[in-house]
Length: 577
Image (cartoon, rainbow, N blue to C red; front, side, top):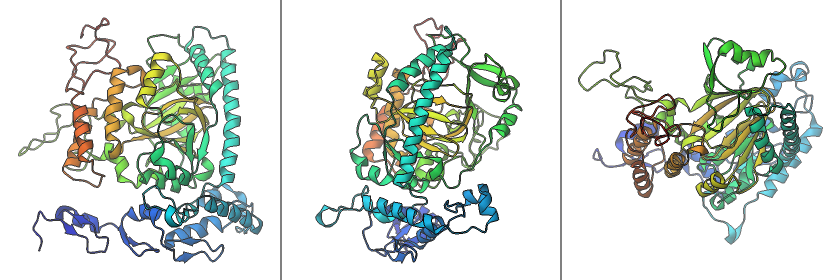
């Protein structure tokens, strides 16, 4: 028997070693054997291994002779590539729900489309054939054909070409929409000011350069600095990319490549909002102010009327501060990767429930009487799931999301053009703030119902609503991006105009909990290295406990906050300064 403190080796073949406290938890994971090299892997490690494994595969499709490392990948391939509806489309579950022919004709196979699909898939496989001989290497970014030819579905060159034609047309449509807004004669209104700024952005924007998932992984370690590239892929391929680590480029899963989307309907959501007494609304019919624009509280019925029964002269409205209502909102490409859930999973109370504002754990040896002893902020945790709602013509000028969060955006209803500047460093953002000059032209991404966007942390972006649009969003951190989280958060405090959000009151405590968990080697998350821990601890000292302001005033809420944020105006008339 090993001593309690000695590591224990897994007896199921994966050769992993664990603290005795966690070995039983490890045994609960499914253990799979690689069909090529016969090595055993636990949980999701098998998917990561298939990126670098070069051993021969053993499961071959009897229809097209493609080979796969696992039986489940072969089953997915047969189900999604070799089954066709009478209308000629691949017979997936989503298609069966929407196509009348699929329900009425007995799902007849269209053999003529089979050869087209097979040729496109073969071209994609040949395009990413790995090097052989001395040129090969076994690092994590190496891509093999078996991963991307087996994805469900695969982003073929035909899919990518169709999307680029579509986004080019939508970019032109966006320019026409801005011209329409400027022709209204709305001088002095926020609409006119923002439309002029957005028109300049769209004038220089282009459709960017799409990369496949395989192309991204082969160059991920060399991506550095402003670029016009982004990744376009299927949901399964997006998961492979994200298992490699935090993405460096935006990842777009177009609706055509998202096999099983779940939607929150706009009519249902408007009915839900009407049950709320009031909503925070950004009104583009308000007068422009150089001091910025805070949302106004509207009766919910007045806000929803703008969507149901707009009147002549109504300006666009934007509702941003909306709590998430969609169940299981995290995209499929992230849901099974624990590293991307550290904001919500680290720092929960001992009974496994997330504490709300005002809750406190009971003191040791005492029962809780159900009354809060103090307030525990959860504003960062609560913001990890949200809805975005806007009418046609609503726009958001360039900004970054706070605290270097990885943001996902799923389009539930309507259309949105998402202009983004990938790869900007903090120095590039500083130059932009100081001069108003972008270090590179923005690229336009088009989101329609069923599209999913995964945006890297601290990415400058500016969305425009082409129609009334409802979106679901989530926010994430990854352990390996915590140093960037600290650096970006400090940059936001020193340059508050770069983001449209306050500093989170929960930020300091949340970061401390993540560092403590990593240092104690607890939990299923990737550990920070000693250098990363030291750097994060050093940066954390900058975020002092408590705000130096002695009181708050009507324009800011600094007192007792976790630190000054972009609402603080000490030295500019605030009595707390």
